[in-house]
Amino acid sequence: MKVLIIGGNSSVSRYVIPLLSEDYEVVTVGRRNCDINLDPNKAMVDQLPSHVDIVLHTAAAFGRQTDAEIYETEKYNVLDTMDLCFHLKKMNVKHFIFISSIFVHLEDTSPLHSIYDISKRHAEEIIKYCLERDEIPYTILRPSQLYGKDASFIKHHPFLYQIVEMASKGDEITLFGQKGGSANYLHIRDFTQVIYRVIKNGVFGVYDCTTITPNTYLEIARNVYELTNNVVAIDFLKDRKESGQIFEYDETIYNKVNYHPKVSIREALSEILNAK
Image (cartoon, rainbow, N blue to C red; front, side):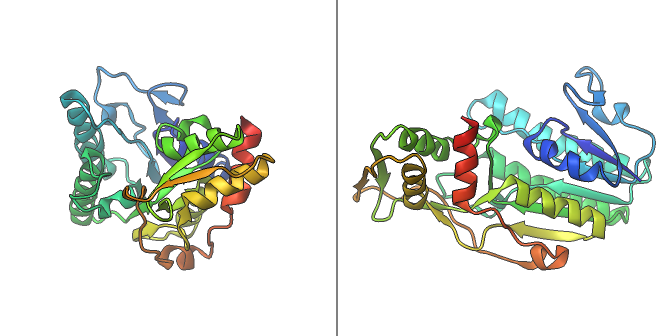
């Protein structure tokens, strides 16, 4: 069977390709260094193979500041995804997997709310409408904050990696609030295992992918200080609102694919430090 991966250079794709390549013929699509390097002057759908069995869509735009970035994010995440949905039936696709984000649950009042989560919600609605109309099975996965040792994760979670950098040098870290804040950091290896098993077992539906227990920034900082043999130096600004955002744990997808996250935060931090 042939799997087409759109966004062949994404962080998710780089980890899932070795898993899928053991059982499938994998074809990558992207802007560079892929099996199919897209010509920006042509529509993406006009450059895709005539037939594939499975499509995994990992590509996304994250710009959220300027008018041009907001427009590009909505166009790339929503309109290009819509064009792809229109094309899936022509390629005789039997399973479409879309990597969304847990941020679709953000309230408008959240400091993390942006065009990114808006566009992901729009994309999900488009996928459901188009693929149910065309009777194409689909899976939407909503991972929480993905991280790993690759430098590509830094731009998405700068605060996490700033803590790692400062604590590894023995510098004092300032955290906000009484406990410093929390986030649901899901390791990339765990998430790509879920993707692999969703494809392998033909699991359809819409699923959140978070961690059982949120990671506190205090816990992260203490682990890095200890792993680097530095004295713990943490200051709290208790009058400031705690950083981060946590999401409710739902183990439905993990039960369906018979895999639960295994990579501990301490193990992952050790890998990040060793990769520096």
